[in-house]
Image 1 (cartoon, rainbow, N blue to C red):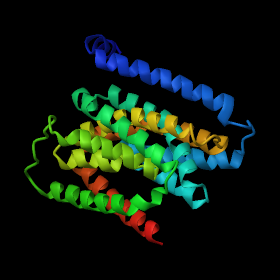
Image 2: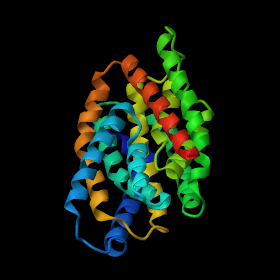
Image 3: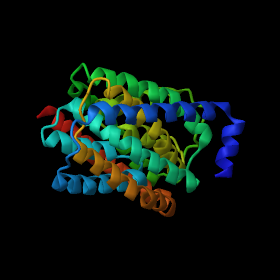
Length: 290
C-alpha cells in the first residue's frame, strides 16, 4: 500500500485520475440508488443464477484477461434484454468486478504502470463514444467486423506460441492509443470486448502474459466506469437481481483469478486465450448474421 501511495505522490497524473474516478463512482452510485432502481424487491432465483454467471465470467476474465462482458452480455441478450440495457447492466456490474480484479492484479504485481498510463485516457474516450452511440444507434451493425478482427487475433496468438522468438514489446508504440480507443469503443458497443481486443493485441505484440492481462484488467475499471456513467444518462432503470448477482459473483472470483494468472505459465495462458478468442469470434459472427 505504501508503494501505491508513493506512486500517487510522485505522479500527479495518477492522483488526478484516481480522484476524478472516485468522484464519478460516487455520483454514479448516488444516481442509481435515488433514480434508477425503482424497487428493492429481489428475485432470489434470478439473483442466484446471475451470482453463478458473475463468478464464472470473472474467473475467466481475471485469469485470461477477457470474456466477462461477452459472457454476461450474451446471456442477457439471449433472454431478451435490449442491447443498450444489457450493455448498461453489464458495465455497471463490471465497474465493481474490474475494480476488484484490478486491485488483485496490482497486489500480485501484474500491473505495468507506464503501459496503463498510455492506455487509460484513449480507452475511456473510446468507451464514452461507444456508449453514446449504442444508446442511439443499433450496435449489432459493428459486431461482424469485431468478430473478424478477434478471429485474426486469436490465430496470431496461437502462432506466437509456436515461435521460439517472441517480439520485444514496444511500450512507446504510437498504435497503443489507437488500440485503447478501439477497445473502449468496441467494449461499450458490444457489451464486452476490451479484453479480447486490447489484451490479446498486447500479447501478440510480445507483452508478457501476466502484465498484459493484469494491466488490461486494471485499466478496464476506468473504461467500465466511463461506459456505465454514460449509459446511465440514457438507460434509467437497472434490474436489481441480475446486477447484484453479477457484481457479487465477480468480486468473489477476482482474487482467485488473479492468483491463477500469476501461477500459470505464459505459454499455456496464450494457448487458452487464443482458443477462447477464436471460439468467441466465430460465435459472435454467427449470432450477428442469423
